[in-house]
Length: 396
Ligand code: NAI
Ligand code: NA
Image 1: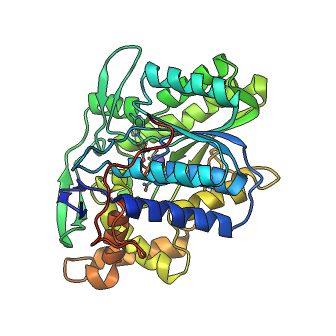
Image 2: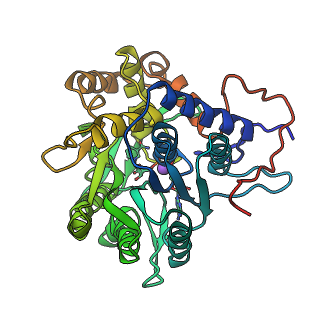
């Protein structure tokens, strides 16, 4: 069929398999162009199909020749209906990995469940013996706690008072004011239950209890801080509480890994267009101004550039892993530069529907958003028939 983007609100209902393949190939080429990384050889990536997790899988495989197991939650295609983008990304990733002689298998299902954890442990046991790196890169609006059976839904709300600020609908370019009422205690608890560190710790416990973590194994989860502009709705809002919990969990996990000389890290990453971040009010306007400035300064990065730098310059730099005063790895260092933030704050004041096309990178935002779904890639003939039914080698 001929596959075109079909938008509904902040999501795109279709995805393009050839475009997803191009996306993966571009990321692989980037990693190869930067040279070998003395990284882990057996890697488990939880949340491996899109965004930072996909970039982590690609960086491990094509930067360090690593065997990878990827866990994700994606919708397979059926005749006449496309898969979700992460399905096509993973199909393309496995195909490229296998062509390069690399082990790559994937598990599609709910990573929060006991069943998917069991399946993953068994696969590691059977095929790899142990892993030496676990990347935890889930972004989800909902989690059912397997121990209690309770389903928690996360919310994106400020805490304490109503937050009012500008936002943009990046499809239309309309800049409006948005007001978000504050969260209650239950909202906070639910958001922490979904996006905090509890499930990360459960994964590491399960792996360690069955001796599936190699001596000196590391695990990394991703966090965000961002500027004062978005603080009320992000870092000091419900999602920020979850990130506080995630960051605190790194220390508990590190204690738990002492006996094998292992360590847990949180890496604070840059704001980027992903399915997760597009749904957060205010963030798209911030990103469109940030992109404009970082591109002008020649310091703009996407997920793959960020993760390449994380692995090469931080995790596997051959010496100490540099961290901030709270023990976090910072690859948001360029985003958070004083000069960059001062310019964003200036532009923020001027941003209106009329000024944004000139002062912000709305076009870049839209392009990146469509890229998430495999659209707008050079080298792909979008007018041609494409087969929507694409299989992932390792998933029957
Ligand atoms: P994403 O939406 O691109 O990726 C999420 C991944 O989680 C996908 O592979 C998806 O299949 C998987 N997933 C979701 N629910 C699942 C479930 N129940 N079971 C198994 N897999 C599931 O998100 P993104 O942006 O890459 O986020 C990853 C992490 O990075 C999150 O912790 C996020 O907060 C963090 N981060 C994101 C930033 C951004 O600007 N996008 C900035 C800094 C950190
Ligand atoms: Na991810």
